[in-house]
Amino acid sequence: MQLLLTLWMLIAPSFAANPNTSHPHNGVATKFTNPAKATLSASESATLSSGKAVLKQIQEGNGGRGVAIFDVSATPDQVWQVITSFNNYPSYIDELSNVQSYATKGNDLFVDFTISSWGFEVQYYIQHDYQPAKGYMTWTLDYSRESDLDDSTGYWLVYPSPLDPSKTRVEYSVDLRIKGWVPGFIQTMLAETGVENATKWVKREAEKL
Image (cartoon, rainbow, N blue to C red; front, top):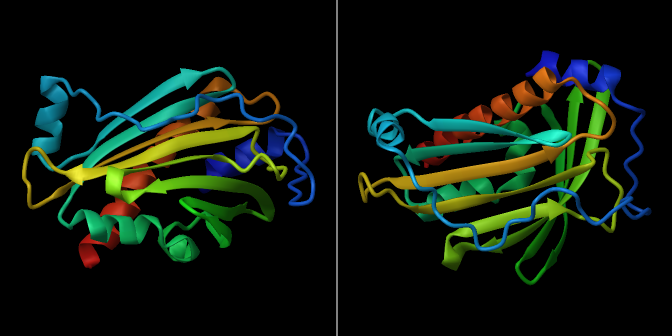
């Protein structure tokens, strides 16, 4: 992951995240509202039954949407506890050097993320719509602030596993758009690695609880 981030940073334009300046646009990636549970093929269900995660990557424009589906031996509340512990993310994910929650407005949670690698930093601001009673949390960039990413949208879905009600099914999807031109193979690897890492840290930390 560190190598991929470094390659991206070396060929991307200079970064200028600024909390006092609006983002250049209000979104180019697909925004998710009340996301639906994925329909799985027989082979994908078999993968989940074996204890492995289902991972997908879809190329879209100047980025890609990654999808991860996996089961966790924990309750939905425990899974949400981990996912929403934003300030603990740097201890969960090596590439995140700093994460700070900076506002809460009703169900909206605003968080400042910084990715660091080899002396380079990428900073971006995310607005989450947290709906635990409905089993999901969606997000977009906070477009009132300028992020180094061109766009990022996605969602978490959390519900009892259809395979085993004592476990929790987690679905994660992120659509990542990068400023400037980046080779397709790097976009693909970034998305694939991102969703694979999501399955690891959420599962690991939730099962500790």
